[in-house]
Length: 225
Image (cartoon, rainbow, N blue to C red; front, side, top):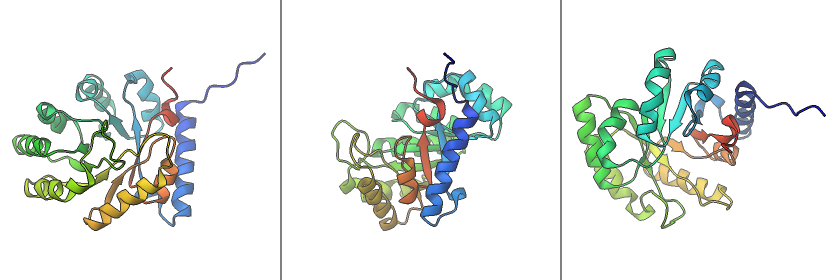
């Protein structure tokens, strides 16, 4: 019996881009207004290169140390890569994160704002920053409480962080659309243009509700076994 064909990275990328464009069109948006971030956490460099070769240039990592181990060499080959930190960041890793990443999606507490501001001043580099909101009010999940968002945003702006938008991860195994709509409303209320929301299972919904960044891993790389 013939074995089923395993999709290539290029095929996966084409399918995700097609679905993204379709969702954007349904929402009356240009696909170019949505940045597709390939979440390469836990994947080795050899799994990332095929996506780079297929033209993907935005990638996301969860951990500073893991990213530092594989991306300097990859960037030597593909210098136009835009690298996003999408996982929780410890304050003592702020300097390393500022040096390595072009965008930081998980600014969620006053101590991290202070650490990032000092790191950016020292490095002379200011990556884009997203404030992470605990949109489902889940005690086990990172992100600032909705009620604390105005104060955190004010502190971040006063500290000179380039806050470009909000990020959130809705509760698992629930309908994501209401949470995406709430995050979009919070962004409008605070005059923030960026919305980092949507993953492999729900990025099309996120795009239809205003996402400017979607964070897609499994649909591009396949499962990790």
